[in-house]
Amino acid sequence: MKKIPLSEIRGNDLRAAELQGSLLERNLRLRDTGIGSKTFHYWKMNGLISSIGDSTWAEVNFVEYVWLKVLDTMRGFGCPIKLMKQIHEDQFIKAYEEDLGSRTVEENIAYYKSIQKIRKLNKDEQDRLDASLELSSDPLLKIALRTEISYFYQILCDCIVHGRETGIEIYPDGNYKMIRGEQDLDKLRRPHIHIPFSYYIAELFTEKDKLEFITKAGLVTADEQRLIQELRKENVEKITITLDKESGKPKKIEYDRGGLIEGEKAKEVMRLLGLKNYSSIKLSTRNGTTLSFTKTDKKMIE
Image (cartoon, rainbow, N blue to C red):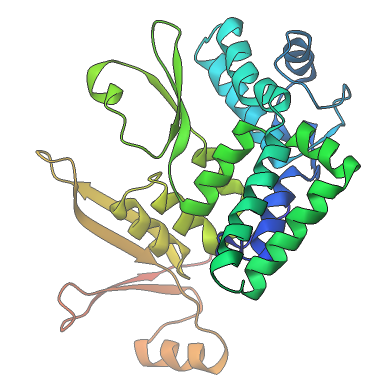
């Protein structure tokens, strides 16, 4: 999967628009989704998938990848096919019938032309206007837009660009709601299944950007973020967390680090500590001013 720099896709220039468009490039193999061929064909026969080829070797884009993952999650929760079909209808089929792609392009053109009446467009704005005008005048591109631009795609972009949590909430009565970062009072009133899209989107970004994204999207807490950062440091072998019994929050965090001294430095340390070839020593400190050690000698039996 091609990794995307988070800072670039969140920009307001043509490069950001291109990266958002790259979510529609088919560069993932269907088999990499982890969805079995029987399950995939069953979904396709039941109208839950509308644009992916029949073969298990078919390539999918990132939007389709997330949709397949969402379907698989819903299946795991035992959601009925009827509900899956309704969500697919609302997010994909209606977007096609309403020609959401062309409508979005026309809205972009109107937006930049309205700015143009007030002031001169900067380079990024002019580039985006020119790109939108090109899309609107090309019949083949308009057909592609109608097929590929969906409400589901827009929701994914909203999560990526603005860092808002997006997803689906499913209620016991069979109804559902698409979440786009707004405060949802239903969370306080009734039980639901929440499927966060950020869980799947995080796989798209470079390692450098992944932690920033999942933290902002609310997938990890501040404490969890600190632990992840520590684990990424060199030589950290183990982290031991002691929780407070009452609050359940971390009370004490201890780190075990490992390291290697080589060459002449190793020989000098061994000489100073009186170590032989089959000796080992473990050093520890509690307050930074005293040092304790345990020395072990091993004998080779011939």
